Image (tube, rainbow, N blue to C red; front, side, top):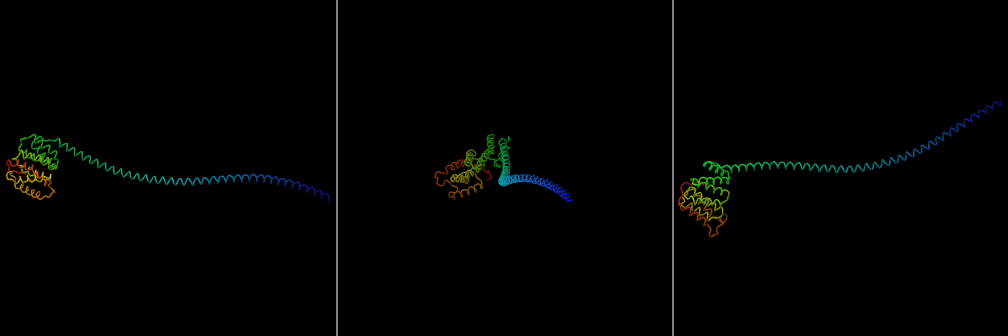
Amino acid sequence: MSLTFLSTFSTGCLTLKSQHDELANQVAALERAQDSESAQLDDKIIEAEQRLADLTAKIDEAEQHLRGSQAGIGVRMDDVEEQVRELRGATDQSSLVSSSTSNQLVELQGAIDERLGALERKLDEATNIPEGKTQLLAEADRLAKDKSFKNARRLYRTYEARYPGDASLASVKFKIGQTFYNERDYKSALGEFYKIIQEHKESAVLPDALYYSGLGFARLGQCKNAIAYFNAILDPATGAAAKYKSAATNQINILSKDRGEICLDSDDLGAGAAGERGVDKAKDTKPAAKTRKI
């Protein structure tokens, strides 16, 4: 029995040892495998950490670039906004200038149209010469009334040329003189009035010619000549009406009292010769009684 027990115990022990060894081998194999896997895992962890570090560095670099880019973009955007504001200001200013220019062009076009219309009217007046005697004189008078003195003068001279012996010729010449007088061309006006004094001594417009001759000389500052003509009106030989004499007397009083504001010939001892000559011509023959309104 003892042998049997020992034998059994001995066999059991062998079995347990064999299993223990196998188990130990398995554990060792597992440990080796675990160590290998752990080493591999460590390598992978190290590799992952390195990759993570590289990635972190790249992220930091990217963020730095991004921040720099954002700052640059911000600066560029500020520049763009400033340029946009300047461009808008320039556009608004250009719009205002364009509006002003458009208005100016409209006004200029209106002025051009007005001037063209005036030129067309002047051309019509210059080329429109009535054929009839009455119509010709009426048109000349109308132009003179409208202060178109040059065209009126042209028609008056046409009348002179067409009707050289007409009874109204002296009146027409006086009207020619008046157109010059109204244009302040006093010398030309005096020339026309002197023609009447020379050629139409008996005309009813002689007092008109004498009076306006006096006014013309006064306008030129030649008061001695002017007074000579005004004195001629006071002479009964000229047959001037009372209203002419009153007006002439008033002019003489004004010029006689002048102290250089009108008269420029006070110190000229030879002044007045032209007036005396004209007056002598006027006194040669008594004119008709009919006179014009002053």
